[in-house]
Length: 405
Image (cartoon, rainbow, N blue to C red; front, side, top):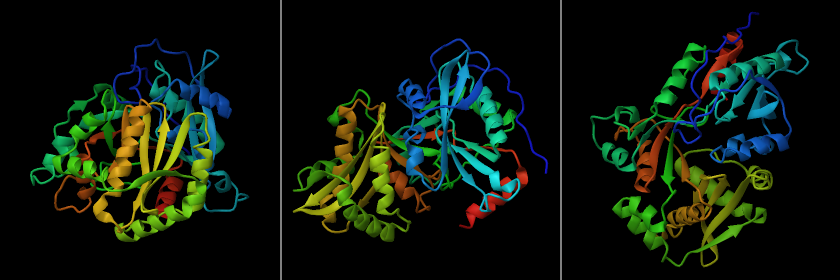
């Protein structure tokens, strides 16, 4: 079987920062090597990057028990200048099978995390070479950074307009030339660009909803909401609901709320053991906090949400609610509690998770975009997930396998 090796990269300007803007000017570093690093070394790299995602926290690998995990560092001139949490998933064959038994998909979500002056394409070439030597048949990365941003009002007003079908049809408030140049160079180096879909891909979403918090107080965030959302959020603060912080002993209540939400909205939830690991591992890390909020009415939980905080970013990755006492808007109350916590922690934004690429009002899935933008969330387009197939036949076969699971 033939295998493809990465092309040699060409020098380029410094990569975009984790927030999507231009990286601080810095001289280029020397030649890069990649080596395994300890969790402590990985944490020290991430401390320099407060915009890095929790998906690059080395403790995340302990949450994702259906994947293997390793921390790899980028070294130049004797110093670590970046790091990557690499998750691995092996082919569904016995480990003793020649060649196939050691083959795996290598996945780097929201990474690698690199210091200013480190060339992204050069770093990825070094990473691919290391993972190729380990037996990877496909390397998938989602480089951090923002390509475009649309204001909440712009997206919300476009939803009922039949002239617009996709987010990319809209005029962005910001478009980053350095991010576009990085994507051009990735294609030139042999990376396969992700398709811009109307819905969601299997991995991390390309389009994400973020409520800006930096420089705002509670009233400033409320002012970003649509009139009806602002009114309902204010009303939720007066609806005799109590917000409490739960521990692992209350995950049975989470599971019940999640199951009800999953049945109502048509998705598959995760079992409470996953959330127990999440609270223990990610919440117990040096960099991140995990808070489990519940909204109660007369002692009965009617909504719940998880709040992640790392560096200057916070996330609302999981939430669930009951139809009981629906008029009290418990999910809005919890979201506003997370906004308050994010402001107190100095977060630059609250990430509400992904939205589809479609803005077609006839597409039912755009209801998610409408809800998040009425909450004042801007929509950003990230780089998405890029593939470098090292063994094209295996990569294709694995894609078919995963699509049928």
